[in-house]
Image (cartoon, rainbow, N blue to C red; front, side):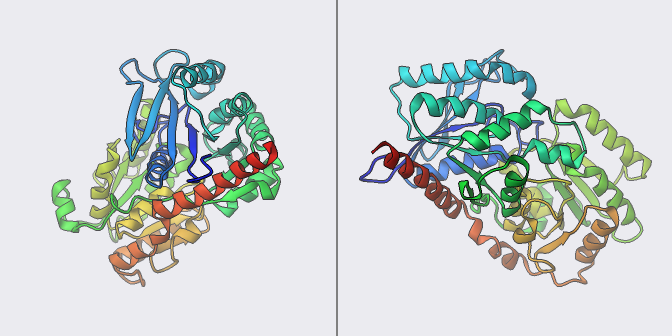
Length: 411
């Protein structure tokens, strides 16, 4: 760390998921948005950030400008194609070695490693030893929690062991919620003082209030009640529960549901959801839009009347932030940090569970205008504290903390 300017040189790791990949794909979700936006804002505040990810395609340029001076650097590890996350584990040593070779060839030095997700944590563990720098880690989701919920694919023991080792080996852990901090302590025996809590952020320049009719016109949508779901097509996201809730609204609000997310890897899951849609006689009320570019999402949020987050599990809840930044209320299960993001009865509703009855009831309340939901500007103002400038500043303070501790230990 430059002691005169207090500016950090950060090597950020996102081994399995490319931060500029297609959002809504199987392995590209909120974490990719988080890494990209955080890297940009940290650079805007004067730090140096290089984000390292694996080459997924031979056509990938080695270096991509993320904006504000942040760089995305592709490193070879295994075949230059999409590889299942578990299969990627065997190529992690190659990634670490090729990354170290790139660093030496380009005469680069970093003050710390900031890894994201369990696969990156494994690489970060070795870089901290080779470079003699602190290692800060962030899980985003945890295998032990997913297995505890028992919905979707079971996470392998390899992941659980790697996450537990990362908790012990890392110099500091970043959790996005107090709930996540408690889970890291409960499942992996972390020392509480080792964990810093910093929420995720939202790009309020991109996600802004627009004229609803204009947004609908651009999307070729009719003047009807619209519900919106944004996310990966994964059983943990609770889309089936949302479809059941929409079915309960057929005789009242009869809204249209727009589902954004999913790629070719999700064909079976999407096929199953479409079958459920047909069974519930909702075929004309549900639209599967697939993947949408991140910069186009504000149009969909602004065209909607309500955004719904029916998940069984979220590490934070970035979709809710994006929707609220556009002035659109949110109905969500009590996952992630929803209870702090959403002001109950004013900017939306947080439900104890994602049961269809509860979802339908609160969606209906908002659509009918019988509640006390505030106007769009008030909804937007409610999440002002989550602006990336504030979040990046808080992350930088966490990184300073471990960097100073390292300097003191060396001295």
